[in-house]
Image 1 (cartoon, each protein chain N blue to C red):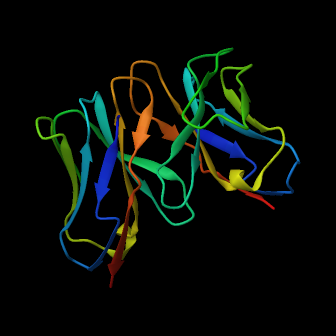
Image 2 (cartoon, rainbow over the protein chains, first blue to last red):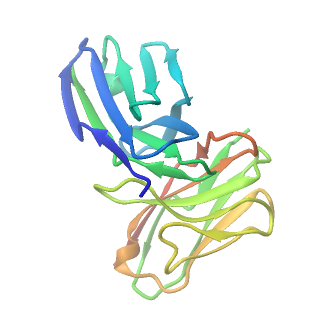
Length: 108
Length: 112
């Protein structure tokens, strides 16, 4: 069965801390996505990657194809980073399979 | 460009009532999707379309119907709403040749 698992489910940290959110998947993929959803808000795509590493501002996404694992890192975290972060995967087709999300809260 | 829009943003229905949710995109995307998001669960695919005039079932299609009469619009219908359909519904679209999906703002539906 094609599955996506995220950890942790909830994460609370102090402003300025380095944040890591993990995503693992069951079988080979075509692409992996990191999405952000603010409370009561819509869903925004942060990264799409199939290999290596991508960086945008304070956000970094990495993927290890052999280990079937991806991480999303946030450096110098800020309260505005508080959101739900969702990992989603294309298992070789045009449909996405989603993780259950990680709720991140950054305390000032 | 407005991107992906959804109408309405909020709706309360009584059990047994019907309604249609509208998704519109102005990016000329071929693919469109309807998802539902429930607490503690990942987004789940209800129905999707790979082009005008086509539709296909996703993971949780029961109780829903869809139509894609125009390329830019994807309609989700509930013929007889049930409390189990209380959820937040998201529409998304993507172009051919890319895996990146663009999401609408969501519709919060409550069925009492």
